[in-house]
Length: 83
Image (cartoon, rainbow, N blue to C red; front, side):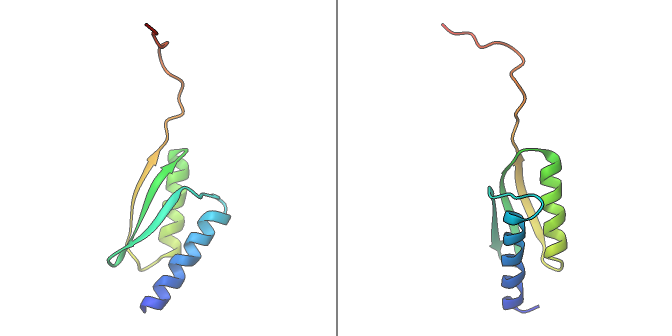
């Protein structure tokens, strides 16, 4: 695969990520050597898994690494004490 083909596929993945079924704008897609690194925060573990699945499918042949954090939206388990 040429560098031009890789760049095209990465750009297509970025577009799909922003417009597609996940509509995710908070994930950064960076080229790191021969691999692609996904970073950012997503709302759920399922959302993270779907993004990684799409990345692997779109970028077949390009190693995909990710450091996607899942935002914790759970309410606190105790009340806050103000002093």
